[in-house]
Amino acid sequence: MLRATILILLLFTFSFAITREEVIKLAEERASQIKLSEKDLEFVEAQIKEVMSNIYPHLEINGIYTKYDPDYITGFSLKNQYRASISLKQTIFDKSVFESIKIAKLNRKLQKLILKQVKNEIIYTALTLYEDILYKKQILEIKQKTLNYWKKQLEFTEESYKQGLVNKFEYLRTKAQYENAISQVELAKIDYQKAIVNLQKFLFLNKDLNPTETFSKLNEKINKNLEKNPELIVIKQTSKIKNEEAKFYTASLYPKLQFKASYEFYNTRDFPALNEVIRKGYVLDLTFNWQFFDGLNAKSKAIQSKINSAKEKIKYKDKLANLEKEYQNALLDIKASKIQLKAINENIKASKEALKLATERYKYKVGSIVEVLEAQKNLEEAYINKLNIIYQYNLAVLKIKKLTGEFAK
Image (cartoon, rainbow, N blue to C red; front, top):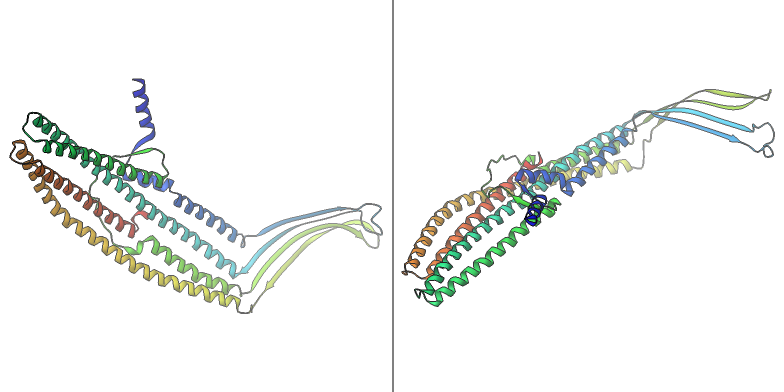
């Protein structure tokens, strides 16, 4: 009793039910790519503060105290000297600074868009792995039903064989099919466990997963707006930044104006009285700088940035064309799956009746075990084909949601 209680506690501790919503939540919280992207965003925020420091006033305090050895100092020099100052520096005009601030803010927006792009990819991958689990779980259930069928069939055949109603071949053939059904269940369990491990590793989970949702068609609500694709938006933002960089390089040739105010005091000797006195007062500086020619360095860099901006625009058009193709293919996959589902449902109905008839014929010694084997195999294949069609349908729906940025919200 104690061991059973411990086992139940362990199962409760190391496994938990999981749904699609839980998968999305865990993917956002635990995926390493999202964490890295979030750190990149923090890094960009720090860079913005660094750039903004160029327009804020800079306050500086300096002090120095010097004491000389009496045997070293000569003449009228002071044996103890000190000097102190407090300064305020302020950039009045520097166009390159304002351009760099604009670029830094655009980079922050870009990093947020990249984070959305990463989330879109991560959630899509996590949901496809979860869908694979549901699919493999359903396959396992079909294999288990097949095993139960052959278990009952073996019990009936074995009893009939003992009574001399069936020959040895039919008994051995039924037994072999039962053993084969056992092996098929074990293989299905392995495939199911592999699917769980794939999601566990992707989400960095140590607990066993227990998917509670049934395997069925996903909601087909589709909103075609490929321009909301996160990858496209990132490319557009990158092009904009490259264009702004060209303005930054050009701005480096604009005049710069800086103001500095300081208050200073120090000790010295007052000539000709030679008394030690303290001098103090303020100093104002207005600095003007204009580098109107730099050997075409800024101009060449601006041209390079504009070229990179144009390249991003070309990449945008190329990516949009590829997305259109992927979107159309996914729609065709959905359409094909719907057509196949109608046909397979009718096939399942016919296969059920065929198995029922073959089983009854064998029971009353009218048919053979071969007929039963063939009928049962056809029914199982029909069920699995239906699952595969639904699986491909769901993958196509998830693909469209990824293409339209559904998971980046």
